[in-house]
Image 1 (spheres, rainbow, N blue to C red):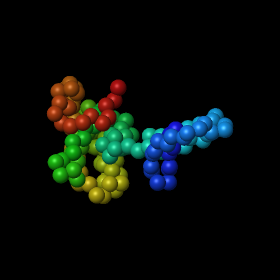
Image 2: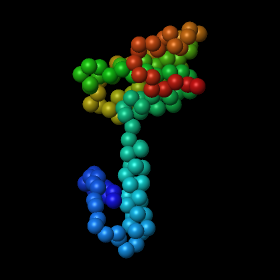
Image 3: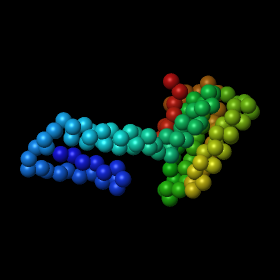
Image 4: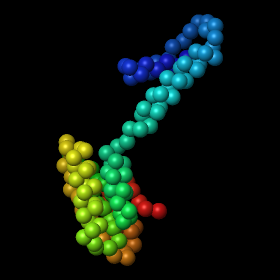
Amino acid sequence: MYNCDLQNDRFEWTHRKRKPKDSSREWRRISSRQAKYERLFSQVRTIESNIGFELSLVPEVECVTVRRQEDGKGLRVLTIINDKSPEIRSKIYKREQAIIDAYPMFEFDFHIMSRMGRSLDDLIRGTGEVVFQKR
């Protein structure tokens, strides 16, 4: 039998010598706890995926890559757009500021690259983990 203690974040297997009187009720209670725990942790996302999500809110952004620095506190973020435009860059700067405000414990190194019709695959090779790519 599987028990999940949500208050103490503890999982354990317990063995009973005899079956509970109403095993279906016991199973519903346990599966309900497990479902709550799975819902809770399905919403936990990495900082990299949050950065990709935040920058994807700018419609002109085509791709975002993130590379974590060796010390683990620094993140290099590359945002790729198709053309140079001060309006687009302004929108991206606002999203980057939101990321900085949300994660003050990290150091960010943001870069914006205009691909100007070049192949996206050639530009993102070796730049880090792709956290957002427009389909």
